[in-house]
Image (cartoon, rainbow, N blue to C red):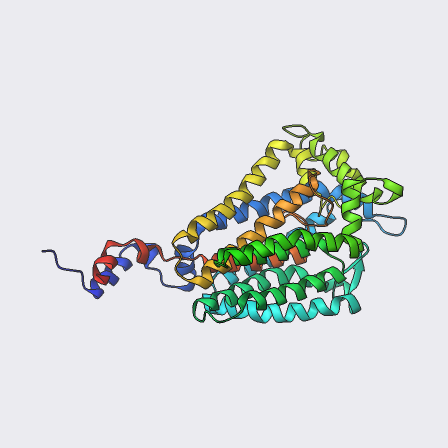
Length: 405
């Protein structure tokens, strides 16, 4: 019978593999990380930079005035700076041990919830909504950073149920979600409220919450929407503008935006007008942020839009496939929740651009212009990569299997 290899022999064989024997932090990270997921993320960032360059002249024209002139590629150069800041953040967070990433999320959730609570009182108003904090040069949007931190925090709380079945995790996480939703609606930010509540519901489902509880929550969702419509003016205005455009003069602005976005999206046909060849984009209100997907459609074609949608879907599917054999309850919930948030935000943004959903002011992940959005998404994707890291040698080597047996 063949004798099992000794531990020292295993170590020697690992080192003999060249790169895989590199035990430096960078070497360990490179071979443990999901490189396909990382490559898809870099692809979206690169596409986003090209898209912002295409949308920048339209936004520069819109925001230039008698006393202010914005260069045509102003937003492109600024986005390049945000990417240069965000990439080290993404890599650095993805290198964190799971415990450290979890602690960062818990502290970040507390800090950003506090900042979110302060925003309605001391925040900066932009386009009719008070969502920003800080002086002009270092303004940030607390809600963007709160989303990934909140999801990881809720995942951690739900994972505690496996250790103590008596914990009322549904009530605790529901109260936290309701608090954050209330703060978001004060800004107002109905779109982010929907994303946060959707992620909470998804995490409850993945965590194995009893069917009767889930049925009750799902049944309560239409009641919540009806209540928001009756008592929350922002929700009522958005829904009315979408369903009853122009009635009594209300919602005309929102309907104009969705119509302009859809017209721009299809203006270039299947292959687009070519880079810089779009003209309909100059009629968009936020070409470089909320409606950048429409700019891509006009200049690069509907085929390019379909490819981007497939990439977003591939990222979400990739994460869930990797989680099929995950044994750690926290890592499973945290990674799944972050994937749901990423996919839901992309879906809502694309739905608004195609006219399938009311205007919500939702950026397209890693593609839309914005410092807060880019850095916050990098933090979220970094944590997602950290929670899905696997050691390929330890999980696949026959030597380790024999030794463990």
